[in-house]
Amino acid sequence: MSKKIEIAELSSWPIENIDRPLIIGGPCSAETEEQVLETARGIKAAGIPIFRAGIWKPRTRPNSFEGIGAQGLIWLQKVKAETGMLTATEVANAKHVELALGAGVDILWIGARTTVNPFAVQEIADALRGHDIPVLVKNPINPDLELWIGAIERLSAVGLTKLAAIHRGFSTYQKLKYRNDPQWQIPIEMKRRLPNLPMFCDPSHITGDRAYLEEVTQKSMDLNYEGLIIESHCKPEEAWSDAKQQLTPKTLEELLANLVLRDPEA
Ligand code: PEP
Ligand code: MN
Image 1 (tube, rainbow, N blue to C red):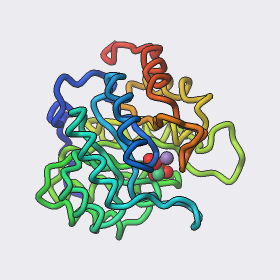
Image 2: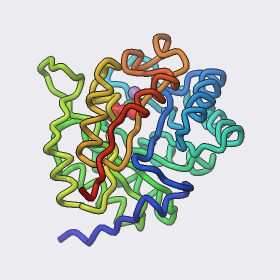
Image 3: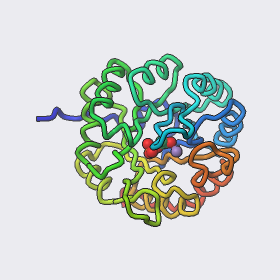
């Protein structure tokens, strides 16, 4: 029997005046200090409160860029000091958690390739015991709702309450329009099982292509998702990872301005 999962409202996160949707924007990967700071200035100018950048990158195949590592934490500290935005990064093991907490990163996320591994999620949960930090959990790469809920349960069991889910689509062997199949019924069922758990959409990793970002983002708004995490890079074509799906901060600002929001109570 699993224990009751206690989820805090988004309003308890350390962010002033949370708008719907709550936006997290920034590059797939931190590459250089200049790229991080230039992108962060654009993200701030777009009115986005949380800056994301991956420092440890779990790549599917070896010999691609695997992240800049701990030195990127210093760049995130500079972003926070200069812009006042909160910072977010991905953690995949206890060492990442220890370093990110030590550097004052405000929000953590667990990637799709980590959510599939209960040992890794448990190790992360144990390293987070006693820390009241928001943690977002991406869906596992395979369409397994129980694994996704299981990761939330492991984090909840160590006392974390500022939890949220990220829908980033599911791997398939077939070539589909989008890089990852959204399988919208899975996050919808997640929300039915855990109604208080805020749901973020990650249209960047669902589509794998900036041409389709707008339609997927709008769909998530039509389903009343509470948040968005979208990749944005000052020079998207030159990005060291996920170049096809990133937008400049300016284009991201336009995309967000064009979203049609329904009243979630209606
Ligand atoms: C990312 O957010 O850059 C990332 C690696 O995503 P995912 O875990 O969804 O593949
Ligand atoms: Mn990415």
